[in-house]
Length: 279
Image 1 (cartoon, helix red, strand yellow):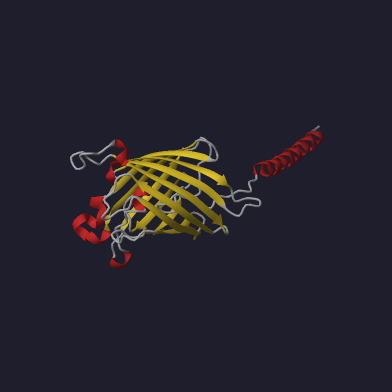
Image 2 (cartoon, rainbow, N blue to C red):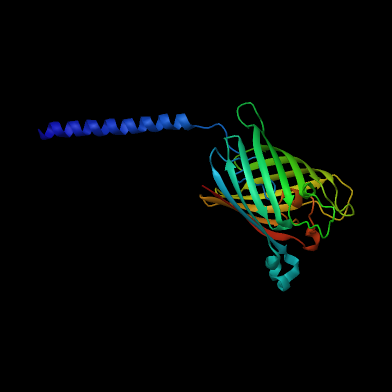
């Protein structure tokens, strides 16, 4: 009886382990994905990346850009002059997301949509994503602009995000951009701006990457600089934390591309961070 019980138990154990191994093999085959995003975070540094949330994913976005670090101890190395962004991103589908944010910079309200057109998989060598933004500057006052209309507060941004994941460690992105502002100071700003950004990331460990981006603005005004930013992605599992160093303090697309005031060569730049928490 004991011998029979032992043989039956051994048979059941072998069958159970074999079944588990088979199920694992089936599961691995079933969920195997050919697509791997070029970027881990929704932003390269300040610019949007080709990464999108999955369907029904909800992100909380908190970003800070402190003041010019060259101000020294007087303004506590920029901490006294911070700008803040508080926003949310929602995956409407697997290929489209919507976002909303409030910025302390110009008291701006931001509405955006990001949508994937092409995935880098199979025969496609690139990710191709569109991104459109409406910014509403609520800081403008009729006391300064007597003929101010609501539409004068609007700024529009249209971008094409083209990225390629060259290897497990290296990804690059090209970002042709068009920005239109309904109200400007023509002595220092331009109503219509064409700009092209180049950015990328390089993984230095499993959870850390070094990122950088540069935008070249096709206009002849010299008051503002071309924005150049470097940063670091830190993947903590539950969220992505990005450290940022940039010569542009704004977080809005219509702000950081067109209104960069810092000069890296003179030590004028802004420190900050982006924090995305997914639910």
